[in-house]
Length: 255
Image 1 (cartoon, rainbow, N blue to C red):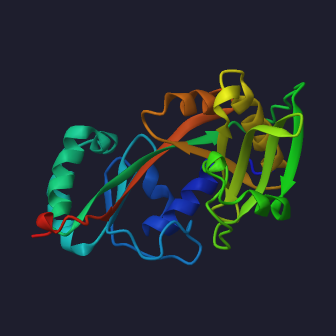
Image 2 (image 1 turned 120 degrees about the horizontal axis):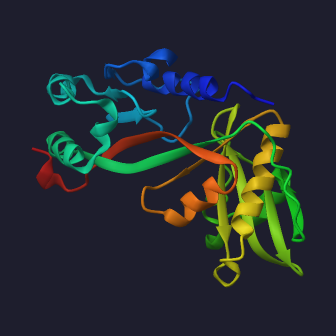
């Protein structure tokens, strides 16, 4: 079982942000140039124009060199974690639009406490191995638990479902975003929500990922409080925040 949890994550992010793992622990903010590392979490086929990450102290920014002069002025006398506040995002957004980009989602990421939870439950549980998951692709009700299709670059590895007879109440699944880091997602059907099913499934899956030698992690958005409560109740704690950019299709901003 992976025990050096934060070291594992910082090592992974250093590959994606073109920096050293210890750069995420420094006092000063760090600016690097983008990289498309072979061992990255494969969320994009090309480098992000800009991406940022903070573990609550400084911020590491990987960005196109054209925006470096502006970024160096922008980060002056700013503590890194404050760069993710809305008034600072507004300034960054205006500059990004000059290059045809805009801010995308902000990901609030959770890491597990290292001890197993060993949850006991009366729910009828069924495990789905990789070959079993194929039958569930394309079903909208499991869009958080599973990828939209089989993705060999970050495959769904395992899922666990809670059953009502043979009907699925909820499903938690995990994708191998990197060989060591498996991200957990959860879906509970509307008629079964509010019964604690999400916390039970995520907790059970969390333990099993550990047993298989990988690191379970969990991500959600700032305002998805239900998802936050699931993470906190399933043995996870807030660990880092990251954000990336995407192309702005409104050409009026690309001037």
